[in-house]
Each structure stands twice: as C-alpha cells, then as structure tokens.
Image (cartoon, rainbow, N blue to C red):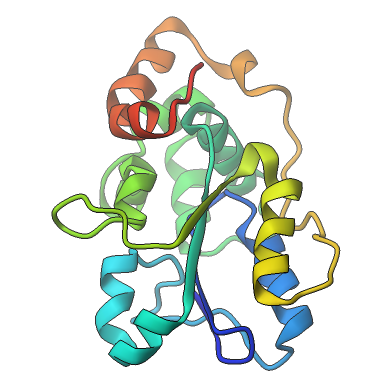
Length: 197
C-alpha cells in the first residue's frame, strides 16, 4: 500500500497489476512516500488498511487499485519469480517448488504461496463483499486509467513501466487443465470484472 498525504490518496497495491509503476507515478508528486509495510506486508487488503489509518483520512482520501486478467497475472507473477536474481522469500519459494508454470498453478498454493490463490476482488472489498475503494483501474488499459488517477490527484507524470518480466503471450502457457484451474480459482474476479481467457 502507499499512503500519500500530499496527493491525499491511498493506493491498494495488488501484486502484478502495474503497482510498481503506479508507485513511481505517485512518488513524482510526493517524493517522500515509499511503500508502506504492515507486519512486513506490502500488499494489504483495503479492509485491513482501513483500521490502520485515521477515519478522516480513510473517508477523505482517494482510494484506488488496479486489477489484471487472472490468467495473464499468474504468468507474469511466475516469470517475475523465476527470473529473480536477488529473490525475496516468496520468489525463492517459487524457484524451489515450481520448476514449471504448471507447477506454479497446480502446486504452489499453500503457505507463503497462498497469496497466488486470492481473488483480486478481496483486495478492494469489505468482509460483506462491498467495494470500498473509489476507483479500480485495469492493467489492460494501464496508461489510460493511470492518467485518470493522475488527473484526479493533480499529477502530471508519465507512467514508467517498471518491474516487467519477460515472457510470451499468457495463452501460450496454459493447458486445458491449468486454464480451468485458474477459471475456478478466480471465478469471482472473472465474473465481477468480466475477464475472459
């Protein structure tokens, strides 16, 4: 998450949705900010952020997040971990337990890797399932939606493309089995955001 007093915003950072680039854009308008960690976590659900900030800040700040096609997101996530040369604990876990993308989808789902099974919708809703952020952008239109955020926050900055991993088109990585696993696992995201394979 990123909380910016200067732009009066709270960014709910969902993994592999362009968040590092969004953070850089926010930093252009508020150089003093950094990723806010809570108990070592950078990627908190909005419902977990809400009790950590004063109520007037939660109510008065612009709260936003970005989401991504689940099939594409998992391919990007796997390659980021597999290609990491200075891996964090999660990337090390993936490197040790998922020698292939199929392994990542089918077997790397518990413990530290459980986060790969969480629907993105959970990051932006309360426990009743109500959306509690003001704006949800799409990775698929990252340039356009980030400009909308920038205009809303009074930022005049180009969005850098940071933290990019090298890989082919996401459809090339799926078998019928892994495609269906992702469809079942992220059924709520797919239904809510209208994603298709």
